[in-house]
Image (cartoon, rainbow, N blue to C red; front, side, top):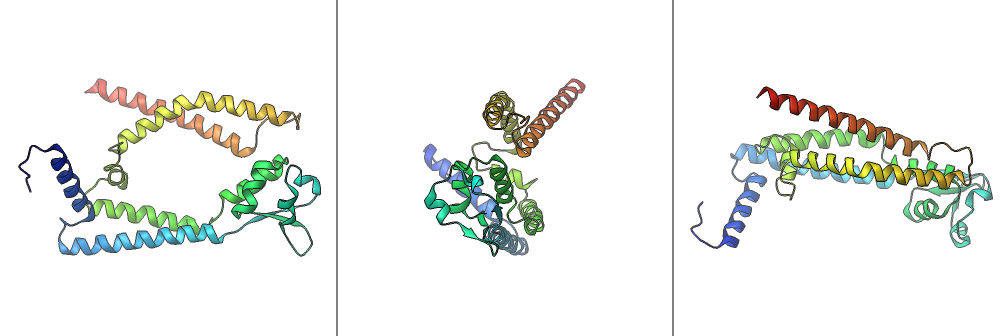
Length: 232
């Protein structure tokens, strides 16, 4: 379809409209269109299951002492649920977890409920996520794309996976020094109440270690690319 016009807006609209048809599978044979519709429905259904598994997986930690509630307002404490033993519970429901993470003085308990919050839906969602990844790849390749990343970024400002990876690497390199300063400030604040503290929670340490691994991997990839260019 060719639009004979000097109107840039009209040409841009035509280009986007045609691309949306291609992305939906309109240009594919009937048998492929059937497969595409099925994959789209399955992906949508899996997404709903994934969200439901997180929503329904309400976890908690128990509070052993009133001191563990220091920093929290009384009206919040009064509304807390309790177990059969009379111990107060901090759950991963939003009205319970977020005030606790923000105001509780106990670093140990904040860390404990934070990990519970992050792990909601696991391990049930492990298989669901794998199925989503597999079916997204099937959808993208059926539509003629190299990968789902290529399909997903095509309509975004970043345009392609290579640009996305380069952007993430640049942000990571620029953000790391500031992240290390922030980490040092958090540790300094923690040491005011826990003088022997050497790290600010295992999750923070894990994130730093992962950042370091990512930086090393980026350097290795850059070296490989430079070597390939020299060979050419």
